[in-house]
Image (tube, rainbow, N blue to C red):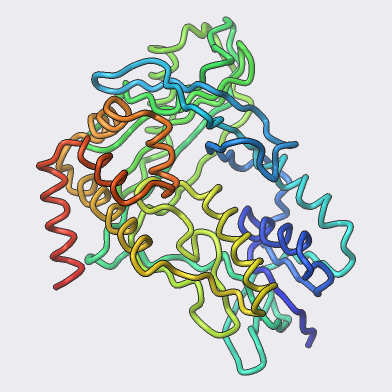
Length: 384
């Protein structure tokens, strides 16, 4: 049975990012095995995020913008996001870039296969991949699925379907992506469109929903067609790519270190922000921190704040409670946030870079009655 220093279970965004940061550290020569059941040779997803300055993947950013458009209940038009840029990264570009980088390291192996068993032992993390056992000093697991069934937690889903379309008419403003367009039937949920232009005739148009159940495939497609016909002067259009995804929005506890030799990363480790589903930038920051601690201490255990992290998590739970119980229309909540605060502050708030008093000020800008009811309900669930 072969033993490695590190095994990365899951070769998606989190797993490949971890391998990338390990190769930039003094641990670059350690033996690594990356396992995934897919080859990752298709553009299966798109990540969008905001960032100040240049990040580690700047060379493969597909598009970036300094201004974004928002369409809510009483606010419509461009938002100045200050020092931030809104960036778009295509999955196929990310996979190709990371794999080309990792190919320079003969100590890194890739294996396509299914993980049938994963457990902790006294000698390390133990896996069976198809029918072959392997071990490692540490197993970094991004394949673990959250439960999402505990009624004491808030368990929503962010699910989306997007089309890359090429239109007959030049109908896209290449300098203005639409990041939240609520001009669609809400159906008691939080529903909005993204429009991310590639050029005047090509864009990713994506329909996104926050609720607790998936739709039938035709329902996503009908909503996309209706939006394009109503809000884009497109003429005829062709669909060149389709993407579909589901991201958990849950305040379920997701321990990163469930065992001595197993570390959960990505959504499996609770890296997804519960109230928004944002994952990419949080994953990058958490993994850099994880690698730095592994270099410094020999143990990949991120330090947790005794106050800030629980307080931010409580705010996430309150927003999830408001959305899950339909205490106030979601389109109006997000409109209040962007209308009553500098957009740059909202982005910092969503990145959890704001102070306690800034958090209080921002939360004071939303309709108070439904959030007070949500806060009381969360307090009751957490305490009792």
